[in-house]
Structure formats: structure tokens, C-alpha cells
Image (cartoon, one colour):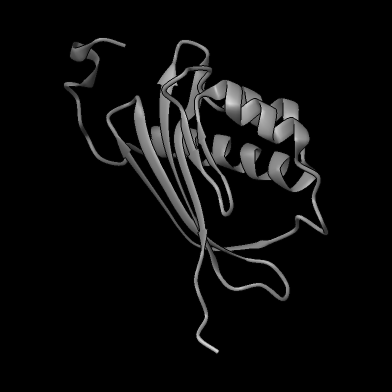
Length: 135
């Protein structure tokens, strides 16, 4: 991707929003199924990729892959999504923010930055956190 590719910063072109929603939905399906191959595919394979998880801080696709391969869900990964906000800029850059709910857990928040490369849309940065509930 070169600088000229980012000159069109049209926000939420309908066809781009459809693409990003589809790839996000693919990511969500893989997440619930713990499909590590698809999750790895959808992250940019770069040392610059960042993932801040609930209990981990990961720099680089290699570290993210190692973490994913070792991750064993302690229960159901099923969750409900709400308040998904997809914002695209031109045809190559997007953000997706969503709240999620799992039974018995506080509300979670997930933010992803997506970039379209020659191989398709990839997450270049992700952040997951849980709301702290006062007792």
C-alpha cells in the first residue's frame, strides 16, 4: 500500500462496509469455534501487529500465533454482540468496535483496526477489555 492509495478517505462507502462486516463476521465465527487457522489468517502477518487482550499484551504476529495455539478456552466462547460500529475510510482502512456479553461476565469491549492488503482484509491492531464492575 502506498501513500497515494489513501487519498480517497470517503467514509463508509456501502460496498466497503459490506466487505468489512463480512470479514468481521468470519472472524467472530472463528473466534467462537476457536478456529486458530482462520484467526491467524485474519491477522496481518507482521512484527508490527499488536493485540492487547484481557490478560495479555502481544506484539507481532508470531507472538499472537504462539498465544493462540496455546490458548485453551475455560468454557463456552459463545457471546452476544451489541453496538457494533463499523467505520471505513476509503477502500483500504476500517475500524470495528463492538461490545460483547458472555453469561456471568461483565460487558466486554473489542476494537479492531483492519487494512486491506493484496491478500484481503487483515487486523493490524486489536484491543479487548472488560468493564470493571463496582461491588
